[in-house]
Image 1 (cartoon, helix red, strand yellow):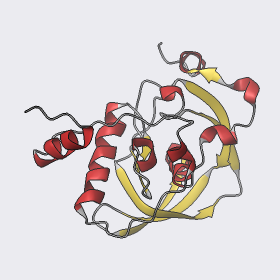
Image 2: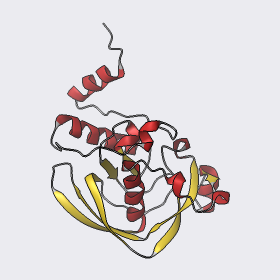
Image 3: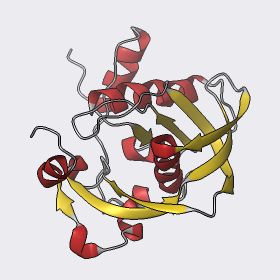
Length: 195
């Protein structure tokens, strides 16, 4: 008898350690506007499954960060992996997992940079957003080890963007100039990437 439900397929593929790619929840879905829940059991199978699905999905969708709410899981977890993508030519940073994160310091200096989001028109819309240039964040990794990270540049930007997702905030709420919103194709032209 064929397996028909999505949850059954996820369980089936998880048993064989197969890659699970999740569709990205889009703006307007109420799950994105609700705060995420504290992760009580980091080592639990369910928590580890969410982390694996996040990593597989962020890479599949060619993004540099993703929060659990973007794949339908209301847990305080996000991942970052700053690297070259079709939209950015960046210095790279390792894959990082943040569980129950808290931003404990924000620089006074702020910068405006264009942002996009997989949950807003499938990363086909970019707009200017003002954020602190540097931050310090504390979180737990996928093994439950606590860490503290000083971040600047694009890593700082991605952390703040994903952190907002955990609090039910979309980057569209922070756009500094609505007249400067542009499509991904126009954004790529602006930054000198081939379309």
